[in-house]
Image (tube, rainbow, N blue to C red; front, side, top):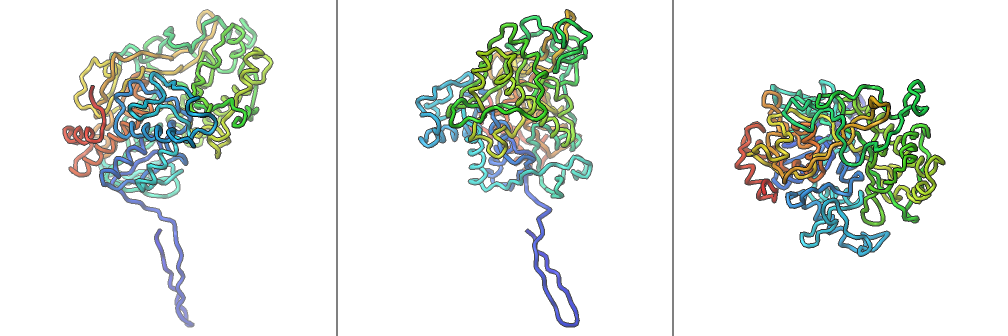
Length: 548
C-alpha cells in the first residue's frame, strides 16, 4: 500500500495528515489472468522457477471446474498425466487418506469407481475422484504455501483502454476496478479467452466446416447420433402433439439445423456439474426456483412417457455419499441452444445467461421431484435427493462455476485438429499429452423433416492412443502478440478441443505455458522463439509426460 502525506501550512503552524490509498499498479515477471486450474498450476510453476508472478482472477473461488463440481475426473489414460497435474491428484489422495476427511461415510464404504480408471490408485498414490471443497482446498493450499499473490474478483477491462500494447507486445492490462498489471509475459488461463481477444489475437467461435482442416467430425453433424443423448422415440416438439400451428415447446429451435459438415456459429451446450446427495443429514431439498414454469419441461415429460428410464445414469459417486451429476439423455441438465452468444458477450449478458442456466437447471430438479406428470417411481426416487449442504456454502449450495465447455478458441501458430488427436500427423514439439474421447455435447435441438424432435452435435470418437499437444497451439501468431500464452482457449478445431478440454490437460498446459514464459523471459525472446530443446528439458525435469 502506498502512503501519502499532506502538509498543510498556515500562520499557526504545520499539520501533517497520514492516510493510506489502495494500490493501483502491480508489477511482476508473469501476469496470469484467470482463476482456473490452469492458472494455478501456471503460477506454481512460476514460483518454483524463481520468477515473480501475480494471478489476476475474475473469480472469487480458485480452480474453475475442478473445484466447481467436476469431481468425477475425465482422465482418459492417466499415465500421460504428469507434472503438477499429477501432483494435484496426489494431494487429493493424501486428503482422503485421512480419517477426518470421511464425514458421511467410511472410506471402505465408498467403493473405487472412476471414469475409465479406479477412483483410487494406491500404487501411484493418486486419487481421481473428489468433492468440490477438497479440490479447492488443494488449490488454496498451493497458493498459501507458495505465497502466490492472487487478486480475486478482478474483471479485465475489455475496452481498448484495458490493454497497453507496444507493437505486438503487451506491456500492461487493466481491470474494471482501475488496477494496472505490468509484466514481461502474460498468460490467458480463462475459459472465455477475454485477454487473448483483447490483445488482438485471432480466434474462432463455433464449429469450423469439415473442409476447413480436412476433418470428419467437425461442423454440423445432422444424423450422427453418439452416446445416448438423443431422442430414440418419435416425440412431437409441438405444444399440441402433431399440431404445427400450436407452436414449439420450450427448448426446441425453429431454425434449420444446417447441412452435414458445414460451419456454424453454435457452441456445445453448458450446464452446472451438480454435487447432490441422498444422505438425509446433509441434504438440502430441491426448491422451486424463481421464474419456474413447468411447461418448460413438457418435452422431458414426453420422454418419460415414451418409456425412457435412465434417470440416474450420470449420478456418478464421489466421496461422502455425494455425486458429480452431469447431463444424460435427450433432455437433461444441458441447456441446449441457450449459450451461443456467451463467448463474446458482455459481463452483464454473461451474468444474465448464467442465471438463466441456473434457473433452468433448478427448475428441472424441482420438476422431476414434484411434478405429477413425472412417473411416480421416478418422482419418489428423485425427491430423496438434494443439494449437498456442506458444498458451495457461500452460494446457496449451488456450484459457483458454469461448465463453459467451449468458448473462443485461438487460431495460433499451430492449430490442433482431429488429425493430431488421431496421431495421423507428427507433432515434433510436444508440451503435454491428451487421451480423452473427442467429446462434444449437443449443440442444438431442432425439428426433423418428419415433424419429430431431435438433438444434434453430440459426438464421441476415441483417439487411437494418447496424442501429443503442440507447443505451437499455446502461442499466437508472432505478428499478433509476442508475449502471450493461451493454455485453455488454445489453438484447436472444435472437435479436437472436444478431447483437449479436460481439466487434467488444462493443468498440464498451464504448467507448460508458464515454463515457456519463464524461458522467454530468461532468454529475452518472444514466446514463438522459445528454444524447444530447453523447454523439453525443463518439462521433463518437472515430470511432464510429452511422449509415450
